Length: 417
Image (cartoon, rainbow, N blue to C red):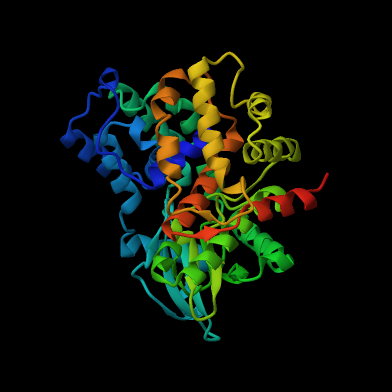
């Protein structure tokens, strides 16, 4: 559970101080600026690596790298008009402009491997058109290998982050995300799951427009609403309702569907106050989890919620999160961070995310993780904990005070054996 804690810690704060003296990097502030520019230029590979590293524990990274990665997450280069037109020509044919009533060439959103434009179909339906950056899929391995060499030479990433594992996972995930046909299928599948689950009321997934979707262009109905973090100014009753729906959705995705949208970016969840509807977006990183893994992971969460230390450590070993040979300090840190993440599920009473200090409780174990961790987490953990940390950080951002244990107990009761 320390990986989830590390991600949660970073999502809520940017470090003011770097790691200990022993992990000095060879990169100056000017060099970090060049690194950030290079990450942005490389688009898919650079942004994916930036996202994954910056979702780890920020206190384990030198400030120059943490600041560079924050910039990577905040911006990316825009596709030139000529390149955009060429991509649409290849996807939709010579007469592509006749397939839409209108199309805005200025993107209104950007992702790690593409940018999103608004348009209007001939029937009057507003749509979002996601166009992949040309060449991204072909350069993934080379770009990430080059970035790995650069980060190793500059000594920027502590051993406890297991850079090689992060790079390997980024390659696999980014390759999958480049397949927009697969993403369209994921989105349609999610829409069917959400619409078919009575417990998912107040949640929506936009329809895909298949006739205007290809391997590198994805067209869907345009969703209304603001990024979920912008709902923090709404009344507490509304914020609590949003938080419960998002946390319940996360639990259902993991334990009921075993199929999860794993990118917790606030821009991927929109809230429309007029309809009181939360809309999910971006299913490129959606993935299934094997039942054998989820069986054990549910037991891990329940052990955390029930404060069963012996069971929590043993299940962590069974899952490959620990080897069993860790130092007492590492076992204590793992237990502390895991119990912090399980804290919302301990009591049947409403949990005050605003006053919880979950971030601080996890962050204090960062130095131990950096120096004492013996094994990289199983691959499932990278994406799963990324989403779990995102759900908690959204509840914190919304300053929610909600009952959580009942949702976990409902999942336990309905879990398919």
